Length: 126
Image (cartoon, rainbow, N blue to C red):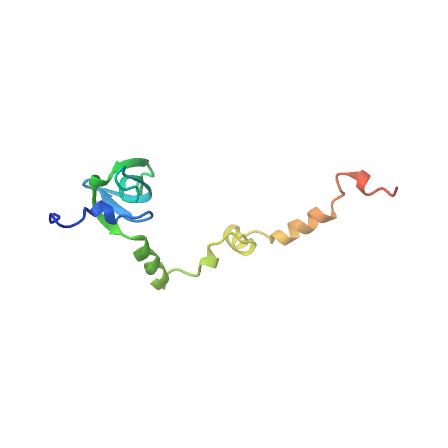
């Protein structure tokens, strides 16, 4: 699998990479814990299973393959023409209105402003 002089695969893994754990478990790396000899060398990884959502710690030797690095995933998103701009997904009033297909929220805000105030002492002239 790896030559003797080559660094172990788990030393190349970074946070947010997608990795193969064991035989058939694809996980997203959330964080890692360094070893006693070298705190910057990852030995334990906190991962989230992409199918089940299970979050657990795995030893670095259990990593079989780096399926996709975070940089590769970002590059794919930038090159993808099927996805629209990020602004189409952000939680804005316009996007919310499109999603639910109901009357504009601005009308609801205007009705709230017309209703009487809750604290009448502020409106009194002293």
